[in-house]
Image (cartoon, rainbow, N blue to C red):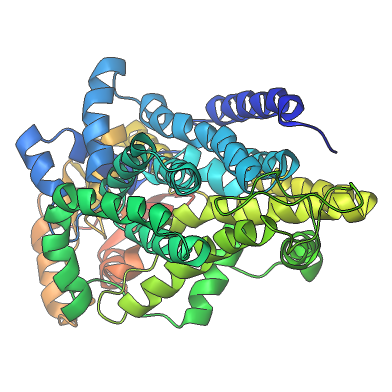
Length: 499
């Protein structure tokens, strides 16, 4: 598949329209989960509290919640309207990634990257979550495009635009700082001989100092001297494995090696197989004409090396930067690295374009295999959100006078109450994972349940709260089970208490 940017433009527009339709049509198939309900709660805070949250230590995503605060009153609060705020930036990733791929490599490489972004199960999942991760990915690819345009062409307005998007990204997610570190590395790698280009970069970093000062006041000391978190440092190999599996298949375990073959083929091709390059490189010099009049297509032709270096550094530097910081402030979750997803798909797109240029049939078969695997993953997602909607409706439909709902993990109350605001009185089990004696926990359970005839036990992440199963074992001794139902991530049991 070859062609000019004009030929690929309509195809990318169709991809964006198709991705928008697919994401929107299934937007409410899954229940909201705890983090989404918390996002609503944050957005409903008064403005001074929300603004303080944006610069408070260890708080994250403040700008997204501020945007929600303006969005939800306009459209009303529902599952659809909350998640629609994620659909739009997720769709924008597609044309932005195409534009970046066209600038760095070729229209074809940009098209393949856009196709992967449109069909990715990972991006599809976070396009349907009312959190900041779709916006995070969108700002990352937009920021990188503006950065490369400014580094290549210069100009005050280009650098100001890049600085503005960078500031937005840092207030949407703290890990955006690792993308800035990667851009610093890229600037030195591809423009180290040109002070004129680097001057714009350093001046932009200076202008970012003031809006980012509130974050730096607690972030820099935390990175240097540590900050308490609920995470533990992970080996670098584990981090890389988790990111590769998530970004590729959105799964936690290794699938059959056959499934990974087309991804491996595209990845290897991106590194080693010569492929098309643009007429002008990313910022150093135009690609010289071939003496034979034919297009220079070698991977190390002028203009080709910087493009691949950019993508490689975009992928590698943030991970290594986090790994070094993680000994002081461990905070690893794969979705915190969503700013790497566009780079990964751009690398695969470059590989597919290179395969198509050298071995057309192999390139098409690899692309078809990737799309087939991803289509199956979207239709039958590996990750399913806890179904608070189903659990809440089940309980409220069967609840009687004198019932109470007992949550083993107390934070489950918020998501349950979103779907059942008039639920029976809520009780919380004592936290027992700190070694509290069983008899102390049982005494607390007896006191809290005394006024009620029946108790609905909601088990959600109960191992994090009551790993010894003290609460459930007490109910099995104290009462008779009369109802039971299982939902994704949640089990509901009802007990009639024996008097």
